[in-house]
Length: 198
Image (cartoon, rainbow, N blue to C red; front, side):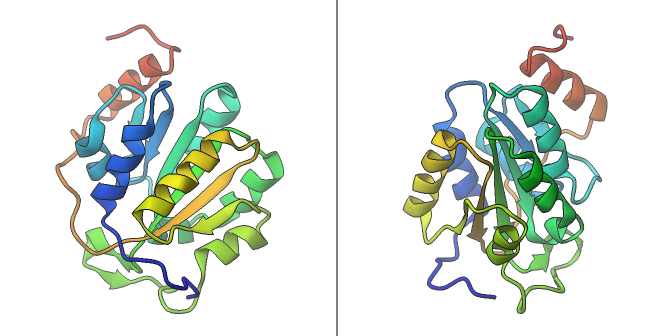
């Protein structure tokens, strides 16, 4: 894996830095497990969608939201293990070119929530190189926290889909998402202005 001199960061800290930048009801799709646990803890909001049991689908779901609401900035948070299950989504996103979509990959090289088993690609694959090879030219590793924030700022101003990969530690998620699929869906639809509040 060619991550150069990228610093190992903390998922909750990086997620909190992202949430602090959101000022315009941007949608955020949190992948399963620790990724959405940290999203919940970093700043619960109606525009957050917390995935349950749908491993690998954060980017496809975010793509649907980005295409349906092209004037809304959409962020997708996904783990490296989950992304490996849906690599084809990268070329689909590259082909459709949603200018309002930013994908963030939290890469610790393990399937953390199921017992920290190493992912098949942990020592041999470069997620950013895969993304670039899939047609997502605006893809980069975040060197450190400040670089992550700069990449988020760049993505918010971009006119093409962006992918930011972050090397993270193996600390567990902070907090736990309330596991009520109907409530999650209804709150999110209200947050996007497509459903009246419950």
